[in-house]
Structure formats: structure tokens, C-alpha cells
Length: 259
Image 1 (spheres, one colour):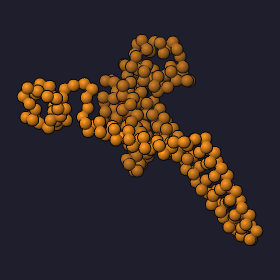
Image 2 (tube, one colour; image 1 turned 60 degrees about the vertical axis):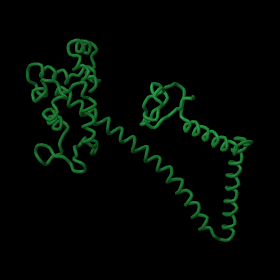
Image 3 (tube, one colour; image 1 turned 135 degrees about the vertical axis):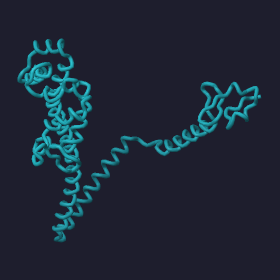
Image 4 (cartoon, one colour; image 1 turned 90 degrees about the vertical axis):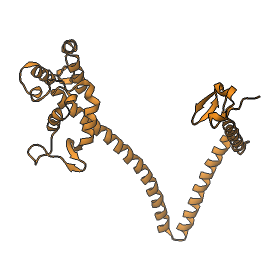
């Protein structure tokens, strides 16, 4: 007796064959490798038949001939256009010729302009993100930003800030967010200060008001190092980089990211 490939329920399987079946996707299938259902085979066979029929439509067609035909067609269309223009000019319908040419030029310009605008917007978006990322990381590093928190804080900043006249400005949707004085736009520094309290997990344990100031202790030392970042172009120093990597690897990573 041949083994059946599929049963809807376990009860349908003969008792002596039940050990050969496993439950998958709500049915009981023969537990074997390299076997598929008849429906899958039928589907595969039908797809092959369909593809074969489609390929027969292109038998005997040379791609080079198709390209040559397309080129010849375009040439004929251009010649037809020129003949029509010549006839219109001869009939004194110069305005129609000019209008048709302008319409064609506008169509081509609109296509080109659309591509340029899309590329410009994409580049502007990337530039904005880079500028906001650099600005927020610089401010947050002064307050003890953890190296592992870079993706989190930059994502938060991108969702909050937009460039206004080249300066990052905070928004709630389309509404500008104001700073402590209630009238001036919120600065990045104010936003980061608030984040130290609202999301302390993004910062080292000693982060806080002291981390950004000139106080003593570890916070003051970290702030001083941030001010003379050895990875930054103006204060680049290989010796300080090596010392910092040995004494405080996390701070070194933050300063390197902010440079």
C-alpha cells in the first residue's frame, strides 16, 4: 500500500502509519525529505507552461533589430515633425510652430526639473541630519553622553530639530518649541540639559549640571577634556588620544564621535 502524502486530521491516518507523519500548517504530512504536495507540483508545472508560451512570443526576434527599429522610428517621427512645421510655416501658422516647440521644451524641462528637485531635497535632508547629529553629539558629549547612546540621541534630535537659517531649532510638530525664557527658540544646549533629567540612561552616572560646567571632580575633568577634544581638527593631538583611550575609553569614543 502506497503512503499518502497528506491527511487533514490524525484520525484519518491508518494506525500502523501514524509514526510516519508530522503535523505542519494544520495538516498531517508524510515526514520525508525532498517531497512536495501534488498541488505544488501542479503549480510549478503550470508556471513552466506559462513561461514557455511567453517565450515563444519572442522567438526569432533579434534584440539588435528591435533597437534599430526603435531608432528608425524615432528618426521618422522627427522628420514628420519637421515636415509638419515646414507646412505650418508655409501656411503662415508660425505661432502654432512656436507653441508646439514651447510645449515640448516645457515637458522636457518639467521632467529634468523634477529629478533635480528630488535629488536636491534628498541631499538637503541628509545634510540637515548630519548637521543636527554633529551639533547634538557635541553638546551631549559635554554632559557625559554614553558612546552606546549615540543612535538614540541622534534619532531623538532628528525628530525634534529642523534647520532654520542654518541653525537647529526645536519643534513640536509644526509649532516652534521655546526655551526657558518662553520667547526665544529652544537651543540644543537647553534640549540636552532637559534630556539629562528625562533620559538619564543616555548619560554617564556623573552627568548633570556639573558635567557641563567647570566644577572639580570627574565631571569637571571630563568637561575640560571635551573642550580640548584631541580628535578635533583645531586641537588634534595623537599623544592625548592615546592617553585618553587608556584612561577613559568611553570618553575617548564620545569625543571621537563628536570631532
